[in-house]
Length: 297
Image (cartoon, rainbow, N blue to C red; front, side, top):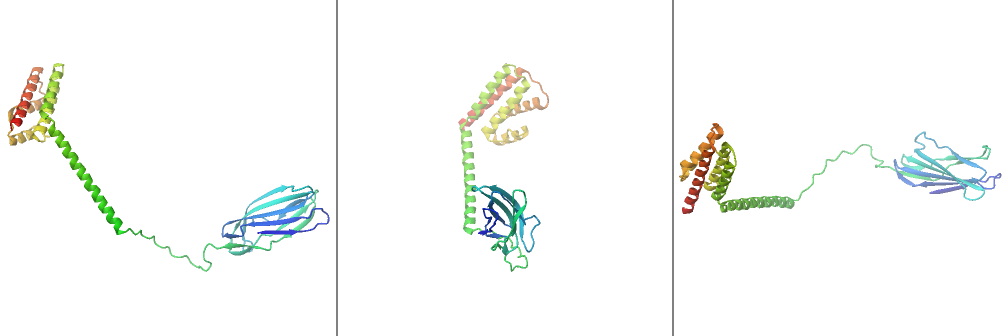
């Protein structure tokens, strides 16, 4: 929107010219409007504006001044140009009159040469944010619940069921693989290697009571793997009960070794190195006998 008006002055060569530009010409309530005023006049004169202040909005003039800027230039020889840029906050609704102003032209001595009252003829259209016929707030609608298709629910259900089944199958296969691997390992050979190593440690200076503690662990591990009983976490009486049920050969020798280890551990019995070496030999014989019985069976 551009409005122009010219006013003649007999005293000056260049006639004062006022150009007004409003951008945009349609806004929403609370939006900003850019209002540009360009005044061209003689180079020997100075232009200023009056009529804009920060008094706020009113029913007659619903504009709030936000910022202003002034730039002076010389477009050609003998002429000067002042650019006044304003930014307004716009309120009200419907067609609003553009703010009017007064251009004051002064000579080089500061004396007022002219005062030009300028009132733009066009208007600015302000659109309301809501329907102007509304007189009360609309009730708040409850949030809508998302509708999940039954096909998707069934798909998720069967998918979860299938994943659970696959996990169980994998666990079963893993457990079976571990069991088969354990069965392929000769627990007797493992125990004999450990006893041989323990005998070397005893000869190297291991305390006899530590030897009995390790001997007990070796025997319990062998019994658990060879006879499939719970021996590592069981007390000696429970192992004795399970071995009796199985009718294990060499039962008395096994129990003597375990009870002697219990005496060392819990009753502060202190056997010497020779007794410890004899216990290792008995344990080796018990294991050899158990392997032979299993091979014959």
